Structure formats: C-alpha cells, structure tokens
Image 1 (cartoon, helix red, strand yellow):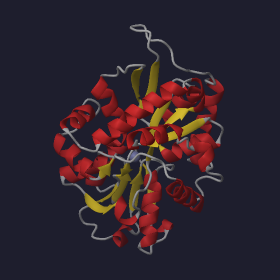
Image 2 (cartoon, rainbow, N blue to C red):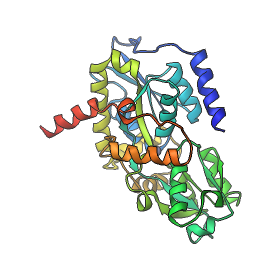
Image 3 (cartoon, protein in one colour):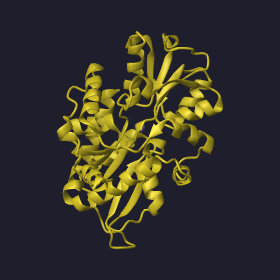
Image 4 (spheres, rainbow, N blue to C red):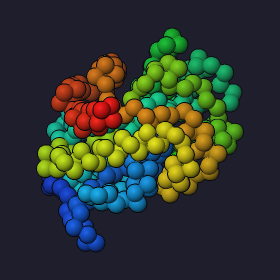
Length: 321
Ligand code: ZN
C-alpha cells in the first residue's frame, strides 16, 4: 500500500516536473493563487476565505481546485498544477520526504476528529477482532485509532485496519462490513445523524490538539511570491477566526462544496476549532514520533525544514500590536 502511493508520487514527479507559479487571469491583471482541497469541513478556513471574498482579493484572485481523493491532490501538487493545498499533514510530510519541495504554513484546524463505531460497540475493547476503516495509511486517523487502542491496552494487531474511501464508510458501517471508522468530517457526523453509528471517542479526549490537515504551499511559489503569500495567509488566518464563530456564512461556504444537511454540519462543527492555526514544534514532534513508532516513514521531515512560520507569525504580531 505504501509502495503504491510512493510510486504514484514518483511517477507524477517524472511526468509533470514543471513549475506553475502565478499567472495573470484573463479577466484581470491580478495573479491567481490555485489551492487544492477536498470537500470536507476540515478545509473550512480555505472555503470560507473564498466564499467571503468571492475569490477576489486586493492583490490576487483565489482559485479553489476540488479533488475527490488525496492521491489525486498530491499528484497535482507534485506536478505544479496547483500552488498549494489543504491536505492531510502526513501525506504532505511524505511528499516532502521524497523530495517535493513543500512548506507547511498553517494548520487546517485543531481537533475535530471522532472515532465512530457501530451502535452495539460499548467500549474500545469491543473493537478487538473486528474490521475498522481509515481513509489513508498516511492520515491522522491511522495514528488516532492506534493511540486509542494503545491507551486501552489493545495492540495494533487486535483490529483489522482497512483503507476505505470516506463516502463509503457510513454505508459500510450500516451494513456491518466494518465495526467503526475514523475519518475527516463530515463523514463521522453523517453516520451519527443517520443513526447507524455513534461517537465512541473524541480525538481531544485521548490526544488533545492532534494535527490532521495542514495548508501547504510549494516552496517555489513562496520564494517567487513572498508578498502575495503574506497577503494570502493573512486572509486565511482571518477566515479561520471567522470559521470558528460557526456563523451562517460558514454553513453557506461549506454547503457550496458538499451536499450535506445543515444538521450534519452542525454536529460536525461542534467537534472542531479553527481559531489557532499556528503549527507548534512540540505537537509536530509528537506526530513525528508516532509516525516513527508505526514505521510509516523512516525520516519524517525536520520541523525547521518543513514548517515555515514566517507568514503566520507576521499576522499574529500584527494582531497583537
Ligand atoms: Zn483534518
């Protein structure tokens, strides 16, 4: 499974090793920043940022590029078809590890992941011997289920972990094909809303502040567009603060990208925060440690090589002064 993902990334680099950069749009002379995303509530700061400004900012136009799978998004990032993305942090770390020059500039959110189980699962121990789904080997959800099992005295091998596309998970749970799953939202809230599953655990109850999604930019884009990057991050962080208010505008922004009821979104948004999107070295170290423990990567990128805090720091200092 790991080899297949690596192969996909390598092929993408060889086939599309080109540069993107910003190009003037046809409708105006503004540069265009292209950011990839998957339609999930974890990408709310990006989606709300675009919604509030209808994509038009003083110095640039923001173009959102929708993907239906993480491997497709990573391929586009590697190929330079997009300038950045809201993406699972571990996938970005893995891409960085094999030579794709990415920088993580801000988080997508904090907390907001739930462990969903079938209604007849009373406690974590009941997962023993069952099949449990995660979206991707290189996901926070893989680490979270491992952490939960470990805390409850179960071993990693006690549960049969399978990868599954998130939209299939609620149905698989309803049909009894899996005992539970961990995934980006709103797919957990969908099962709860349908009554086919329940929240077995909230991520913050056993791993507070765990990192999941991150905003990355291609380093070449940053180097060529530092002023623009600063402007973009300023708006992104402001949108994160606005998203945290869970206002009507946020629901509109999300429903423009995903066909889910407001009840589902309300439940999903109860579990997540967007107000502090700065990546901290200590939590990054914990994430890297768990990745090593599970043997998911041999050399997770060093914090200083992967994380670029210049832009979010500048925004924070501006807000404080
Ligand atoms: Zn996430």
